Length: 353
Image (cartoon, rainbow, N blue to C red):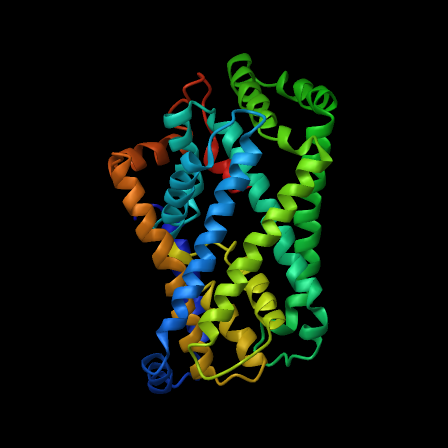
């Protein structure tokens, strides 16, 4: 709580919540919450948990060129990571699972973080795909919310960012010797000790990109990413049935794409505000009353937050981990300690790249 990043996230979340709550009749929203049919959340949680298993399999697939680790080993680590994202700011859960993987399987942090960044790039590409796939839906919506009216421009910039990163990673993975020929002369300009440490980190980071050297593997990673996010959209669809409104599955794909791109913005732990504001904006643009849209988005957010957090806390305790270790790992991720391979880590920089 002493870090400026924490308070920046709180301020951004507060801004989004203020924006989402303008003109809201809180009594009507609470009435919609009270009258919801919560049985519909159960199949939604089931769909989400299947997606979580596929996430573990995808990470197993990404790490396979480095070390073949069973999915049953990966699943608890992935769940702990999502728990960390939900209760810590700035996606510290990604760093957390990289440290746990080093602790359990002796995989270099730089390499595992490279695979995590590849995950996030593919997730971003799929989210943009959801938006572009539903541009016809978007064109029929009103822009009075202020957010939805600008999403085409956001999608364009997002495509340039995620697409450019994906192309850069693919080229680096396919032509590692060329990449080394580019960055080694630059590193040679640094002081010897710093350059050597940076070279170790970058080399191991490139090891983590090995999964992209095969077009077949890249297609498989993209395919599993699509399935993961379709399953999450299915949760949106199930939870919708708990409330007195209806939109198409494609509308919920659009909402999923928009809110998950918005959650890349720094915020308070659990994506408070950055998830809710855009979600409410999309639904109100579809003509859903603001109170109902707010009630649904609130319940959906809780239903997305609770299962991985509770399960992650269970696995966290089962692994014999402690919060003091998390603080130590967080300090390491800021570059104050060293990896077990002898290289100083800048892992928070890598995961937020």
